[in-house]
Length: 265
Image 1 (cartoon, rainbow, N blue to C red):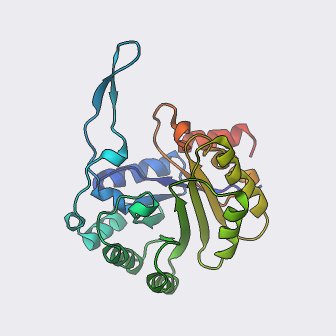
Image 2: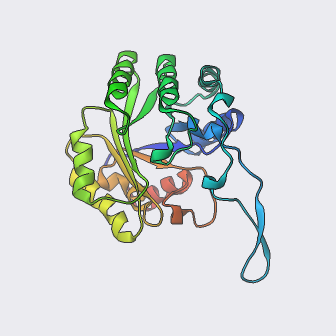
């Protein structure tokens, strides 16, 4: 069976760390990396000490939703995009995720669209365009990407829950012509939600559309681990090695490749 492409989503919040993380991701087995440009507006805080049940202190990082976010004017988009392009050797999916889909970009939608336009014009390998972008802006971005030879991830991120498998499969099918890869990511509140992702992948297998379906939270890693038999075209992984990462629905890139070897995928 064909092995899916592995993309490591970069967690860093500054350019130098992103460049270093991209190099480490390539060494760890990533085929490409996702630059989350919206994360450059985050300021990573210092860990805080909390007392565990046994009374022992433990260093804990506050959840990302509580991290400080800088103003949109603090990042020069054109200069930063060029520095990333000059410094990252592996293919890149360029993403500027808005808060409505779980991202951190602090500016207006017009400012975000302008950054996406700069990235396309710079010749990034892939661009992530959300289905929630207004049609007037989306059509221009899609046309610009195709003219530039930039591959398109046409994506949707449900931060509230997970629809049924039929609706997920319909989203992928109905938008198959809009991107080179159709991505759907949801929030799983139960293992039943996680199974909707798996069922959607099974339903889509063999239909000729390149897709990536996944969820966050417990069970969200099932579709990632079993991607080769589910027909998933691209799997998003991480370099994070934090304890119980599967509770977030994520999987480390090395662990993913080890799992595929162990399962003889």
